[in-house]
Image (cartoon, rainbow, N blue to C red; front, side, top):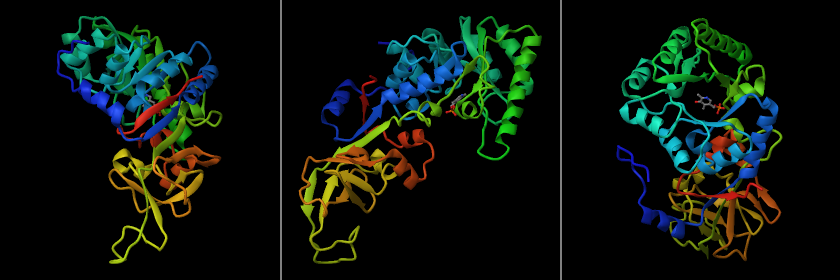
Amino acid sequence: MTDLSRPVARPARASDQVRVAYTRPNTFEIDLKAIGDRAREIRAAIGPSVKFFATLKADAYGFGLLPVAKTVLAAGADAISLVNLADAVILREAGIECPILVYAGSALDRHTVEAHERFRLMPTLYNEESLHAFVRYSKGPLDCAVKVDIGQARLGIPAEAAGEFIVRVAKSGKLRIAVVNAHPYVSSGRNASEALRWQFSRFEKACADAKIRGVTIPIRVLASSKVLRLTSKMNLEGIDPGQGLFASAQTRSPFHALRSELIQVKALKRDAHPDETPFPVHDGMRIGIVPIGYSDGLNRLNAGIALVRGQRVPILAQPSLEYTRLDLTGVPNACVGDEVIFIGKQAGEEISAAEVMAVREITRLPDLALEVKATMRRAYLPDA
Ligand SMILES: *Cc1c(COP(=O)(O)O)cnc(C)c1O
């Protein structure tokens, strides 16, 4: 157990076990091999000398931090970057030994500085306060990154001041410059490439300013997913794609399936108040109840239909908090315990992730995974 000097909220042990044993039958199935294939594709494209930081923010964009971290490292990533310091500590406690760059998710103070030192994490310096915290509390020297705001109005030291700032960080005695990075804004507009080149030249100039003042920068990183899609000319000494680890034209979707099962099947009969039903009820109608609802994220994770016994059946009304109703009139032998698929394949039928994304107007696959709430069990197909 790690001795953390500040109390950390952790779920109680017993309740963890209860959750695993008795949780509802709702599963998000993830294809790690698809993620590994994508990481290998990126590794092959950048060549062996460019450092590959796999950015695993937001619980690896919803796919699960630790399994995804192990997969991308085995597939050729050199390092991991993320925002939440707690996630970085969790990776270390799980035995992940690679460099971990923390993009700054908490203000730096004595506790967070100590955590970076104790767990050998690379902090991000981005303003006077962050540097001051290290000067004051660090035993040093620790490898660090400096994040530059190159005009995209994001976290970072403004490009004009960056050269001088990098020098002060390097001379603080508490920190060694390992990385200088920036995260450009790339729109989908007509002038996106031009605006990217402008940001890139500001980044190069900030790094050159530091070099003129005698500081060498081992790894400059600017190319995140959208940059890599546009050009390989900005790879520099390192890249840090995030959402692009989960989708490409060549590799399969890692969003393998979203499944549950029927817990009740019954015929509906309605004699009074026919207008007061959540959906139109007709003679001979049979419905099924599935124990999954909008508290699990299902309202954004369905295409209005589900698969039962290999048939497409309509979802009736909207999912409620923990239940969803299906129209099973067309599947007379459906019964309690039958598998229900909202995304994925069943008996030759399929509802693809792309079909759900089109209905829900979600453009990026990781944004679909981010809709899956923590109430759902994650299950991983073997990375074989
Ligand atoms: C999120 C993030 C990335 C990765 O961005 P994608 O667009 O998901 O590839 C890279 N660098 C920084 C600093 C980030 O915060």
